[in-house]
Length: 265
Image 1 (cartoon, one colour):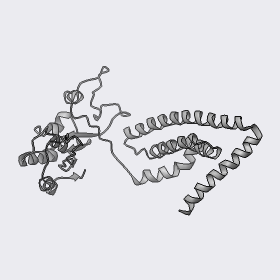
Image 2 (tube, rainbow, N blue to C red; image 1 turned 135 degrees about the vertical axis):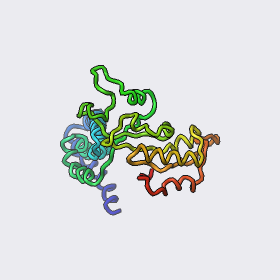
Image 3 (spheres, rainbow, N blue to C red; image 1 turned 90 degrees about the horizontal axis):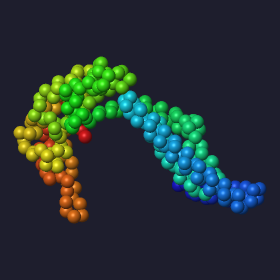
Image 4 (cartoon, one colour; image 1 turned 45 degrees about the vertical axis):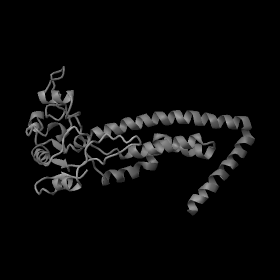
């Protein structure tokens, strides 16, 4: 609290001092003009750096890497833009320190490395339904003769991705769907339980359906989600996208089966 209070008092005091010193050298009008110029160009450059950070983060995700630096960098750029909008030379200085890639890397580089060591994640493309899914099942070839199955060993290595998500909400009746997609043992398959489809009424819940989904997940996925049902949300007009509610005991019983490897959602 003492540090926060010091900042509240200290930053305006520093800004007043700089306004007086710089204004006495270049004049009041030029001082105000300089504030507007730095804010204008600073915000434009912050937007440019924000797009670059977003592109870099997406490339990290495709490589199955945690975009730790990009996440931190994105937050820093947003904060820097705010500092640049606030009139003042000290805030502008801090804002430019956060915007420029070199100084931002010096400030946050070590922190992002620590986060990368602590956290790992896997990106699972959710492409198991719709037109593209049928092409994956048919093993449709691209114009250059390459398979469209991005997880296949013949797919270009720089774009190959050995992870995939299949949902029981679409395929619970097809016990061999993993084989239909051509998903080998070296591809990590995440099985979605289809809870959303049940909640929205696309699938009618029964105890028999629960057992079918369980066995389907066991047959087709390496890791899977529990049969989780989203909470029923009622809006002000008493409408809801979720038509079904499932007793908690029925939902939880799925995760008690001893042979199923599950990941709680």
